[in-house]
Image (tube, rainbow over all chains, first blue to last red; front, side, top):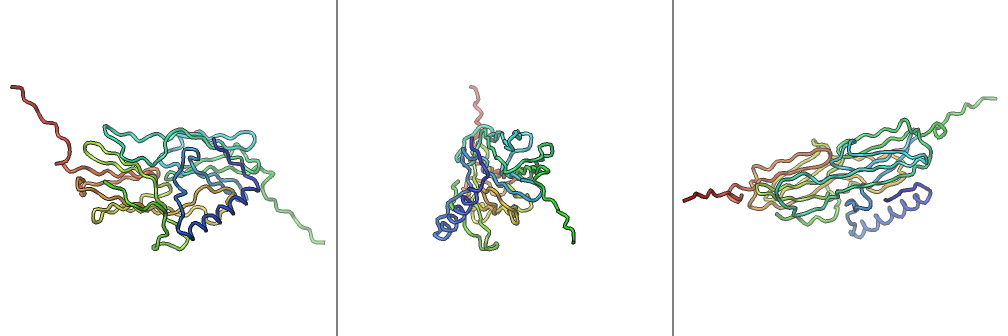
Length: 147
Length: 127
């Protein structure tokens, strides 16, 4: 199980990653970062806006029924599921590049979320989980009184 | 049937400078009557997919609309880009009968074999 913890170190990680990608591109040696390995399937992207956090995963061929999405008390999103092999008749596989099998990924979000209003949607094999921020994280407009 | 050489994502001249084109993973299956190519193209809508057969090469182009532009990313394990892959098609395939279907980000291309290369059951008469 691979766990992603969001903390200030990620800023540095991202920066290093970006530098590495730029260097590799510059030298024409950029490898295929997209091919998921069993350990990191599915790859995740996480972002936020004023209203919430968003977790996105590329899960081609799956639907919401194939997934078990849960939230633990410490703002950790757990994503479990299984990607089954395609059904074929009598024959043989000549090449296998896609990933199959059970997977589990967890993401600990940087702040509390409103667990009752978590929503998940699937579009063209891309899962998006929307986690609205808890009221204490929402931006507030503070009235400034003129003197 | 042989897969081609495009092992690394390459910058595509047809798109904006920051667009990176990716090499999507594919499985290849062979049955008695057909080959099946099954590939992952997450984020590609059917109308943004182009499958073309030209000079014995099957080219697959998928356009994935950018999703992360303007977002405050907290964690990034993949980036979104277009997909391109090409396969050489052997003489044993009936090019006219190739069909493709894209569902939930998975592309399945069916490549029927020519009738003359399909195994035939030969009736044995009892004497």
